[in-house]
Length: 186
Image 1 (tube, helix red, strand yellow):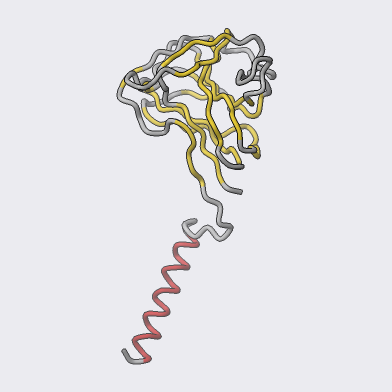
Image 2: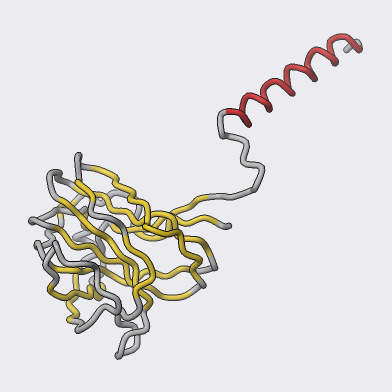
């Protein structure tokens, strides 16, 4: 290859890198987002009653920054608020300290809904509880063939603020549901 062709290809490569960077694809800070939890859509329809704050435990394997709480739903028209609690309640593993929450959000369409937390939060590795409360009956995806897991819940009128700490806990066993969190490595 002669020097002229090499020079042209070098400028073309620089142009592509510049285009990627200007479009947001070149992440110079090295921040990578990833999901933790049940982010692959389950085929079954779960049922979540209105006015109950409920959800399963979720493990954060390494320190990360929480940016969104999320669900995959089979229906639309409901309003949802989500929250994340430390698993530091009165009984080991129960939800206790409120870590983060979202604003009330309309589920405008069935499918994936990722809701920004009110404030991004640094999460140490450990166990947490991811919960949601709905204003009417909602239908997140559910893995009916999956192993039952603890589901933590309490009564909470949708219009009331997300409590911190969680408060009196009840526990039932349910199949896995499509709740997850979006974090990054910053």
